[in-house]
Image (cartoon, rainbow, N blue to C red; front, top):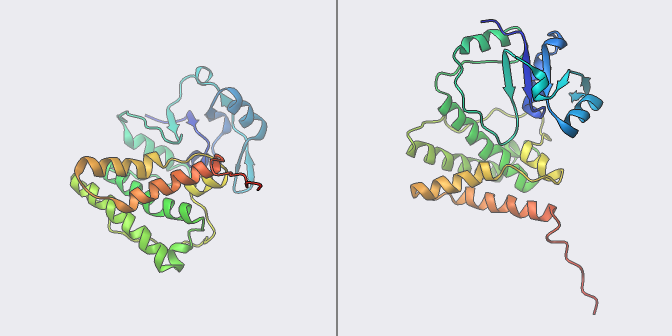
Length: 237
């Protein structure tokens, strides 16, 4: 099996990473799949990655035809399928600058990524600070570590062992991860999938997750703030 035609659904951070990694491949072999206003915007504006514009063919699902590889990079979605020939995917990405690693235990890998999102994505969103705060503040690092511990405890209760807590120092201290980006843009976040799911699993298993529970409500309150719920008018006496 050889992969030549690629379709990409979703052009956010993950989708943009794949598109950037495939930038040296023929553009006619890669297409963005979108419809309606999003399709028109992608045609009009292209994709801006690291300050540079990239233009790819944009097709509606029925126009895309047969593709050898479909990359689904949308938020808060899941694709339940089995790749019969995972090595073909690895071989394809070997021709690009995207890093691709075959993981025999994807469930453990997903929980590890989940722990990263809970412990690194969420605290900075509540505080409104860059990722450098994890290196520069023992208090921010403490919160991050406690959130990781709660994910680890729930994972172990499900028979899953994730890697120990620990991160390399970030070279971009002012970087904003996705949840803070959403809040700064006035958008609703993926907090239900992150801390919300932890709260639900903790209750089902009888495991307290107080840091996740607080973080869930804190970000929900920030969403309400963005929605204008607290735009109180001063009373004139």
